[in-house]
Image (cartoon, helix red, strand yellow):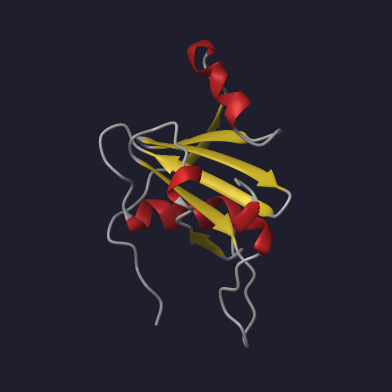
Length: 122
């Protein structure tokens, strides 16, 4: 069954970081791109193990439709998952941020995580 989003999402627009946010570039994958989708701030980068998206809002966590809309809007049909790293490896630049990582997916073994994801922040 296909899920229908509960709300119409604003368009995803690529942005350039303003000078007061330039420090963010030093915390993300080289070549990452930056987007806005309404109030959502999105960073999309490609790490050695695959795509990584951070999505945040200024006053609350993004809802499921926003997270899925951003991921599929930017990466079409690439499978991704929200991953909870070990507490000591948890890093965010926002109080209300989720991270989505590309995952391997096959019919016989859905949602297999790459070992590289689990050791990337170690």
